[in-house]
Amino acid sequence: MFKNEVYIKRRETLHGLMQSGLGLFMGNSEAPLNYPANTYHFRQDSDFLYYFGLDMPGFAGVMDFDSGKDWIFGDDFGLDDIIWMGPQPTVKDLALKAGVNNTAPLRKLEETIKEAVSKKRRIHFLPPYRGESKMALGSLLKENPCQMKTLASTDLIKAVVSMRSIKEDIEIKEIEKAVGIAYDMHVTAMKMCKPGVSEQEIFGTIEGIALAKGGGTSFPIILSINGQTLHNHVHNNILVKGRMMVTDAGAESNMHYASDITRTTPVGGKFSSQQKEIYEIVYRANTECIAAMKPGVPNRDIHFKACRIIAEGAKSLGFMKGDISEAVEAGAHTLFMPHGLGHQMGLDVHDMESLGENYVGYSDTVKRSDKFGTAYLRFALPYQPGHVLTVEPGFYFIPELINQWKAEGKYSAFINYGKLDKYMKVGGVRIEDNVLITAKGHKVLGKHIPKTVSEIEETCS
Ligand code: GLY
Ligand code: MN
Image 1 (cartoon, rainbow, N blue to C red):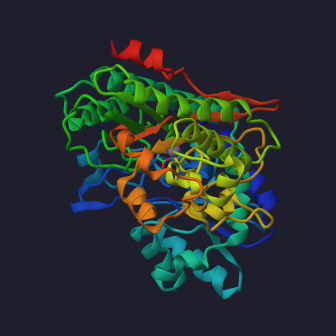
Image 2 (tube, protein in one colour):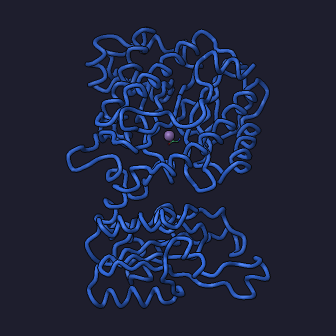
């Protein structure tokens, strides 16, 4: 945990942003695998972590926005628990670590909420994303658990997003630790990327690094020689020469801050000329987009900068034709990059996505596009100092998409479908870094992970 003053200050800020009512923050509970004592890996809710810091199941936090008082509800362990789990701190001791002076057992939470509801006070809560939390909230508020997401408080969502979007220096340090772990994961993956090695072996090895050095992975590892499938979680191939391995993997620091890095490595460690051609286009998109990041510039503009670089590269190889600005305006580039440039990152890898992507990455004036590809842009707003974003352009040869568009004659004014056949084996290339917006510009976070063609070849050798 950070020092208690961090949580006290964050809660004070939130009290200042909210007018009245109760703020109810449900910590996550254990989720049983097949019986209550055999559980899935516990991961605390990020909003609860942000305001109350306690990284254990079975707590709820309440902020009274009228009186300014904060509470932690939770049950002390009994002797039976302690025999199995060892000595445990009291709820009072734990609450003090978060700077909270008021505690009560969980059964009191129901009374507190009931009383507030009877007085017609507003109960503000954030959208729950787990079955257990939906059930708990539904039971507390006497509402249908399936409706809890729609009943969540927009005022609280907006206030929390405004705070969590701007990272404090102590949070940046945690993210840099997470990038440090990702360095070890990616360099290990590069060194293992040889013909005959299984994806599963590399996946398991780098997952182990995330667990050995931090809080485990920040999302399920994407690692495949079929990198043209954007989120490929299947690891059952044996590496063969001629393919490229996309590794999109990050770790959590012990305090649950994320990293999210992608590198693409040729199997055997040497780029073929075709692989290099595609890689250099994506490298240019990654580095030129990062270079242009500074406060006030909208991420949507940088996304389209990446799209133009991808499309210009495609034109230089004969895959595209015509005016590139017109092609990108029309959406033809999405054949090669059908996703957004990146997303905010912090306590969640897609930071605050559970609060609603449109609250995090869009606003009343900046609206999400519904066009293919661009609709996946998770963050379109102008940058502010303290934002942390991923920059992850890619170039993919997706057979199903190419075949369908070719059959439809889609964008035939801009695409030379016949030129693609020889490159299908390249599969997919993505390069991703984690970038902080600073007062004057930007900073790529953490230790530099091999990224140029020569750095990767050297690492592999
Ligand atoms: N790294 C996975 C993602 O950004 O969705
Ligand atoms: Mn990402």
